[in-house]
Length: 258
Image 1: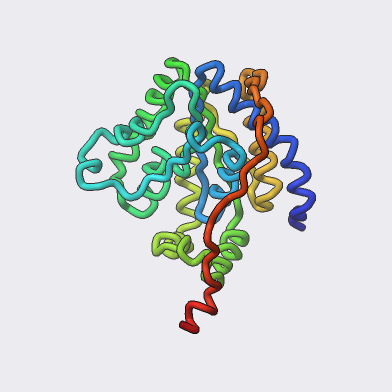
Image 2: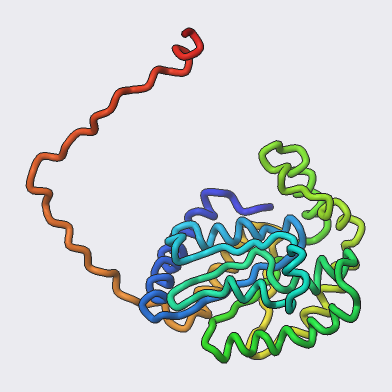
């Protein structure tokens, strides 16, 4: 049985305060944080990212969800377009899918050759070692959900007009390739689970519990999240607050009556 919303929100609230404190520390320390969110379609990447980002300053915490490469990008070094989105000092970047597209959807759907995938699996640990050695705090999460849950969530997207935009032709084609994605994931993790950039697999069959687990793990792995809040001088206004002056718009019903 899935976790109830009220229970989830009550458990998330203190973690959200810790996330705000963590972001304050990142800014004060000039740290650079990169978090990768990977998983099958419908695993819950968007909800997990929202749980991390929702209370943070969007100018400090950015989400990166890159579209299909352009013709120019397709001719670049594979990692090149991702490098442009890495954080500067004091920033947090959350990748909604990342360079690991090459070892997942590109491999399974035939968008990359076997040689390209093999080259990627060899290069990724080296690329990530450079990032970590330069001081970037890198966290890699795989959100795991079984096929029964995937089918339920795909059906929910199909039936909900507010979520149907999430249902792509690739999502539908991937339904018959569940085992292929499993094999691709195992090969990817085997090749890229390293001491300097390990993978963390989180059970997302219950998405709310999964989000709590992920946020708790992330907070536990940040070196230090304590930074005193900035003192803000907020003196009395010195006069009576002014009232807003505006001309009220007509109700829509009145517009149509005209």
